[in-house]
Length: 246
Image (cartoon, rainbow, N blue to C red; front, side, top):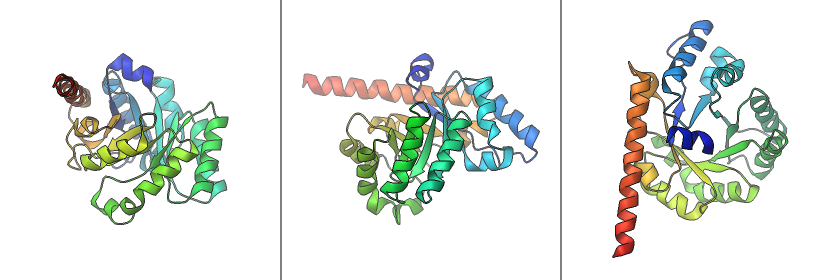
C-alpha cells in the first residue's frame, strides 16, 4: 500500500460496496471493474466487504487483483471463535486479499489466529476495528476502544480502524497507538465526515464509498476527494512548521 500511496499521491481508500446497486452477478462484477478502471489512479487501496462478496462471490477479490494490482482489503469484520476466524482470514488471503479487517471484541485468541494466518500468507495485513463510524458505535465499542487498541498492538496487528466522523477520537487513537500502527478511517461523505479531517487528526488513510461509487463520474469524484485530502495534509504541514518557528 505504501507503493500505491506514493505512485498515486493518495491517502484515499475506495470502499467498493456496490452490491446493493446491481443484483445480477455479471453486471455487478463489470460495474466494479468499471469503477476501478476510472478511480485506480487516485486511490491507495480498495476495500471489499461482505455485501459485495455475498452477491458476486469470493472470486471478485481475485478478479479485481487480475485486472488491477491495487492493494485489496477484505472488510469481513471477522468476529467468531478462533478456528472459524482463522478460516475466514485464510480464504480471504488465498483469494488474493492483501489484508483483512477483524473485530477485536472476540478476544486475544481469535485475533491471534487471524494474525497467524496473515503471517503464513506472505505476511499479509490485519486491521482491527477499535471503533466504528456510525452513531451506534458509541454504545458498546467506544467504551472499550482503548482495550481493543492495546490488544491489537500487543498481538502485532498492522493497524486499527477509527471513526472519521469523530476526528477528535482519531487524534486520541493516534496518541495511544504510536507512530507504527496504521489508522484507517471510514465515514467520509455519506456518513458526514469531511475529507481530510481524520488525516489532519492523525489518520493515515480515509475510506470513502458512496460519494465515489454512486457518483456519475467516479473517477472525477475520487480525484477531487484525493486532492481535498492532500490539500489538508499540506495545510497541516504548514501549521506544524509555523508552530515550530514560534
